[in-house]
Image (cartoon, rainbow, N blue to C red; front, side, top):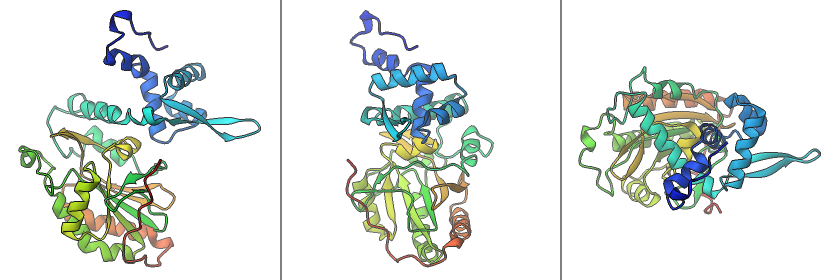
Length: 310
């Protein structure tokens, strides 16, 4: 069970945090809930944990304000476990832990915006097909929040990129980081191919950890016809365990391209992206195939964002 905080550390925020999530099973439960495993049996199956230990951790995380129980069935009543606002505040902690381990424990310590094809990050990404993206929304550059998966499209292409240099300048070392350069080019290539994606019945969303106002300035200057989504709170990164790298003021998504079907299932992943034009072409070919069940062309413009989520 989680340990109590010694009196000498009562005012230490690190000790207080460790008392809540410092336990192995507690942090893995939070990881799985962020990935959409919300029910007891699903959590037990995914973690390979005993019912007794899982019950103890769920009670602890509930009492600590990280999880809340929400009924999904009556007669008998059964519950899902969902992240509270405090729980969602832990997502950057999870992704930072993953980022640190990818670099220093599973990698050679090199700062990189990409990854080797035989890396742990590549293996994790290439295992994503068949994974269902949990329900979530992200801030859109057009205002409000938007589901990353367009429900009107036969397929949705999510291209994740580190950051563009407009409007905010990039860190001085940016050009020396492998895989970091090319975000503006990638957006332009998707812009040029956008009519083909729409004709195929596919939606396109760009995703970065930049703020929506920064994305808005870039999208306006580049006349992008698709929506950019901000994963500044790393909700998408935590849900799919997307690889990141830490530079400048925070975490950046490593470049990847995902094709998701209308049932929210990841169908194809390009990672690492070593040839941006080829990755765009591959995304179009896969999106055509995935959206083939609903070939009707979509409207020319991007979908409207909803009002901010409460």
